[in-house]
Image (cartoon, rainbow, N blue to C red; front, side, top):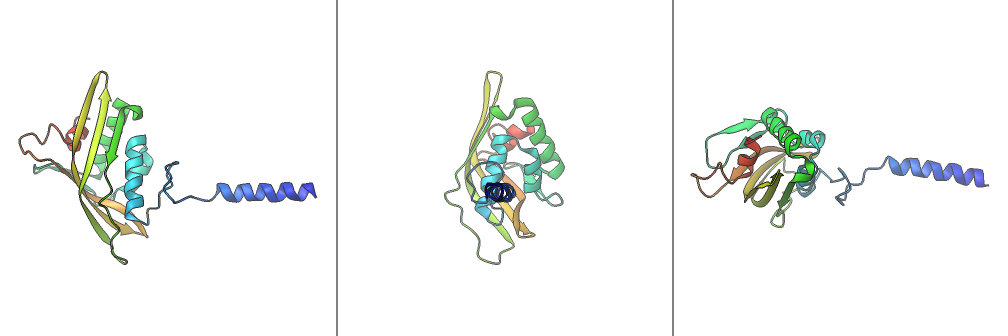
Length: 177
């Protein structure tokens, strides 16, 4: 009898280890990308963990564009991945902290294939040696649905002052690396 219990217990453990949790409890990449909020929470997590592999999959490889605050400049997927990698290589994952206020974000209507989220407050710190780079502003994101999952196609970094846009925005911090 105990041999059968051992086999059933082992089979149950194997099945449980193959199951992906999608409730967004923050234990790894377990957010449900079939929802916009799940994708945004995963975006936040990979920025706080420096998880390049997951970050690459959150962006549209063929059509991603990052737009700098109040200036006519942008970069695409490859540049975004290079700056993300360089930032974490230089600063280390323990020295990057990102907060997003997602309280105003809601899910799009059923059947929507794109979704634009506007004016999401962010707060980012990057500590290098004894200096902290910090930006507190807003961002807009456009997401599109591919194979049932939301990915980011456009990111607009926002900043109130055109004169200081390169000094206090998320884009300014990324551009340093």
